[in-house]
Image 1 (tube, one colour):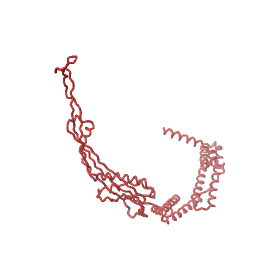
Image 2 (cartoon, helix red, strand yellow):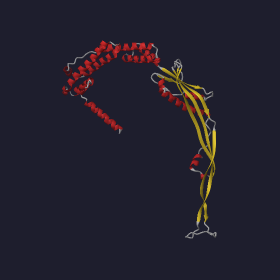
Image 3 (cartoon, one colour):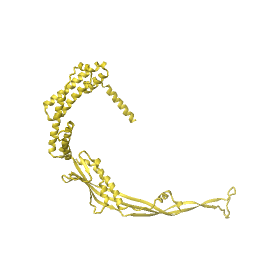
Image 4 (cartoon, one colour):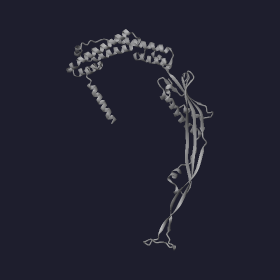
Length: 389
């Protein structure tokens, strides 16, 4: 259904676009679109040019007048940041002229078209725009301020849009990028006074933070030599509790009544009674069978408590912190039985299929809890990554 609605919407939009005549576009001030559409119409049906040629002429004159008036105003205003707009206007004038020049000469003569060479003005505006952004970027870079360095970086990129190999541009872009970056180091501290498994800290620091990186923030789980870190994320392990291995034994019994032959029905004289057909009357006899089950519930758990703290290393300030917890449980039940297995209920049969198992080692359970802790840590960093600006 959604695909059908999307298709209908697309067709409706296409219909609306096709209904926008050059005259309609001109009347609504969309002169460049009117020029493009009029040129297409004239080239497609030259015999019907009269329907569009006046619209083309009026749109061309009006759009050129607006652009030239704007250039004149910007020249009088004299603001140093005007060159981007001047460059764009001259580029528009040239592109518009190139579209019109695709028409045969007879139509160009009809609208009194006269070609203008905008190349020198475009080159001047382009050069001045590049010089303006370059000088502004250098000024911002001199402050050595992080936010100013980022602004300088974007100014240098605007210069590169004009001249990819402008002066020492690439070196300055890299310099601005380096000054504008915030680097965050992720560290683990063991404050438990316990000897933890050798792989525990290694596994915790195997935290993929690449997808959290932003344009101006980079997270590292190991220090890069020579790099100044602005922030630190420190996970301080406070306690690792490993419970004793607990086995709880419980006893239960399954029972079932089963057939155990039959008994004759006797009259008051001790004789076997007969039914109407002369057959001995018998009644079934039952007995109860039993299965005695010993159930063993095994339990062991690991609990890790820690704190995650965000520090600004440039001013040695704690920005935020919160406690985190991770649990890992081992629960296992198995059983054995003695007696008549025919008395076993379905739940008992299923339980008896479990074989006795050893408790997992402390180290394995701590590592598993560490994986859970690592996921919590990553989630907290993701939710608060905006504090690292």
